[in-house]
Length: 417
Image (cartoon, rainbow, N blue to C red; front, side, top):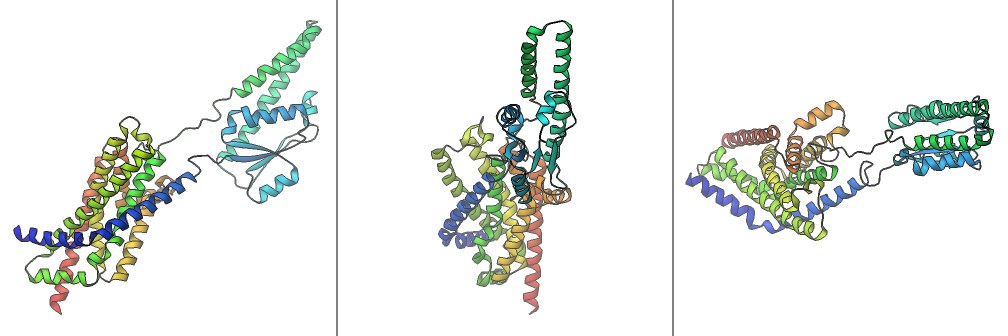
């Protein structure tokens, strides 16, 4: 055991002897990742200012009833949270539609309002949208059809029935008042359609919001690409050290274990320093995730740090395994980058897994990055996902085992020469 600790101290000293550049690069790299993630999240349609559907309305806006109805939809109706109504000419609507700047447009035919006033329903409203439009646009189309076929027609029929009733009872003097009051009731019912639109923030993963999710995603991306920052520890002339250590009687298991634990301490130290600087930023900028609302930023940062250190075990084992696969510096850079990019993309660091097809979701959720994200998200939400934690430790064991096997193969090749 004392022989192993001598080897461990040797690697630890080697890693930390020139670690100032590693720490500086780590901080810079994390800041860049955090900046990219913040810009990315703010410009996504499900965060910040939501992108509303743009729907044009073509018709004679000078008609009082038409103008009043249009203003009701634009400013008072619940649908204005997801739909932006734009008065347009027919030529402008067609032009914007071709350019993709308009989701749909509605053509109110000439004389439609007058026809409604006299009880004539022979004129039809035309709804124009692109071929194959699905999702919320089709829902909006159905909603418009429902308004026209039910609310407008039934309101019109109700008013005429009321007028006939008033005439039959010889209440001519109050007829205008009845029509006015009934129109106000219909307008009230129109504005009270609260069930049509309800904006609700849906947690992205394990009960965390989008900002919390991308905080965990940035940490995972930082950890998976950290190997590029430590290439010179494992490639080039440093890759020949295993021959020297084997000649001194150290087995492949002892060599990999000593490198692994010393490398883990280096990565954990970098993560800790980043969290110290992040805590200062959180304190002075008053940044706070929604998940920290009840536990506070201090406890939230502490739990996030602990979960990050836990997943460090797996990522360090992955890095050492990949360094055993390729020993040349350029090849190692390409392998580490391609493996890191592929795992982080499919695992959900760039986009949440819900954005991908179902078969990609199953693959991504089973990958090391997917499991580490689930574990960190659950920790951020104040719970522990033991299933993902077990998978992370299983991956750690697997990568270390594969690294030992490859080291034994490399030793045998050297002995055979």
